[in-house]
Amino acid sequence: MERADYTREGIDRWLAKLDDRVQSRLRRFRIEMEEEGLRSSTVRTWLSKARVFLGYLADRSKEPEDAGPSDIVAFVRMRLRICRRRRGSPPAYFVGWRCSYTGAIQRLLRNIQGQWPPTTAWTSRLERTERIFSSEDSTRSTFGSFTLTRGSFSNTSINAALR
Image 1 (cartoon, rainbow, N blue to C red):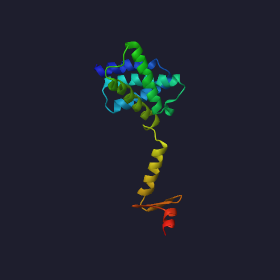
Image 2: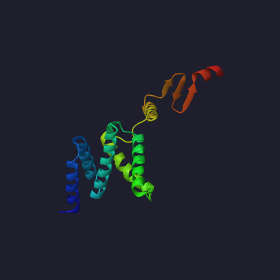
Image 3: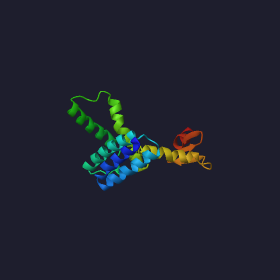
Image 4: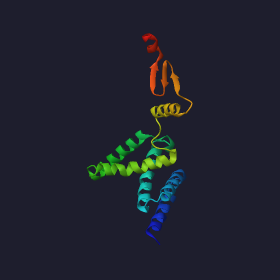
């Protein structure tokens, strides 16, 4: 039996002890990582970090589908406080320590939400504007008194005043 098989069996044992919703999310997360060819040690570590994050969200009565960047920041701060309390000092290599959590959590949320990071209002507006200008038959768009034409910009109020 290969080492990866032992790791998979160990993961199955501790997954079996979890709540059904958490268990199903983590199983899907594991399958995705294994399909992408990640090492068994990475899968095990990231599942562990993801499990802790899902527990953090559950304690705050928040669903992973609604989690955002601020939740990750708050989680990392909480874990840092725990680490300082246990060790008496912060991790020696803070960036690596933080990334060990954020990489796993961001990948988990991408798996659950379909994309990560979530779109913002600004991103949505930018995408809408890009769609307007990328269509072949649309060479001119008007937003209020502003007219946008490929390669130029004009404000009808300013143009009328200048005439």
